[in-house]
Image 1 (cartoon, helix red, strand yellow):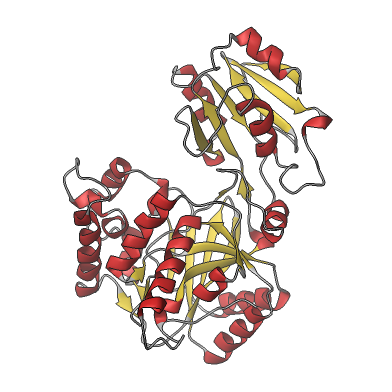
Image 2: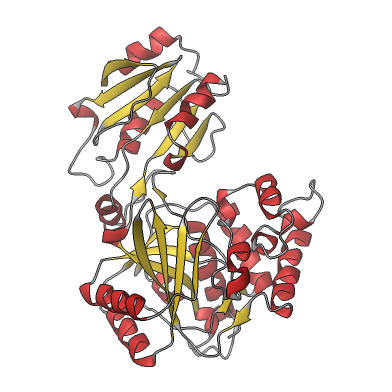
Length: 416
């Protein structure tokens, strides 16, 4: 039984929403954020990447940075760039990419659900990244960005969303600079709110699709506040955090690829010979080629593309982890051949979201920055859910969801 809670969201006026809405904090670095927010005082990046308003050599984790986030959040409210809804509502957030639209329910998820594993995870989190976002939540006393959840599709929820969208005008409707359409509705009808909450109570679980660190930070700060409050009742706003919930049958996971700096001292010929023991290799030439099915990889090495097909004894289709192509690549190539033993900490490997295309892989190898690149077939939503349900954890950097949620369409205050 999953918690969904209506809340009084803080939202921008429609005339500045396109300028205020930003990409999530973790998909761009400080330099990119400075460039993206340049000349735009409305950008939410001033709150979620507040270092852009401080000297460039500032320590990103210094107290001054977090204090600037709180200061800028207050400024946005004082200037009425964020205005709170008068009563608790639920919201519909839809995104359109390449002609396909996905519809999510925005409401608060429950801290208790995170602690009790009703909210299921498929990735490990890094303590340093967790603590960074926890500090941000503490100083702003708000969830500035929604986390991206999925749930098992339910016909009645789809029908409610479809009817509401058809009968009501979106309060926000714009196309961002990257070509993604963003559409947003406010559900303020109590009968509909109550029914959606009831339908979520019937769900056995929800799933973190994207934003594991933000989810952990939001839940842990809520739990922290509970433990520090001797008069805790369970009704306080800190018991909940901001989430956008999308049905699993509307979501698309794209490939998440790998580039490696060197061949671990091997020559090209030695490297290929080792690969041939575990894969069937097919040289494709200079034109890029994508994997077409599970257990097939494409590789770019020394100006040429190859198709690698994993041999049957390298995977286990009956094991939710063993079936994954990221597992095969790690166990058969990255660890034994290239000697990359810790994907989270190794400086010899980098990860490239499939949204950047295969050209990004060949570019990084051709530049001499990297020695070899691997493109993977995307993980499916079924695989993600199977892993989360079985209590397993995916290898690092396995899933890349697109489109990303835009931050700034709505904010959840932990005060009310």
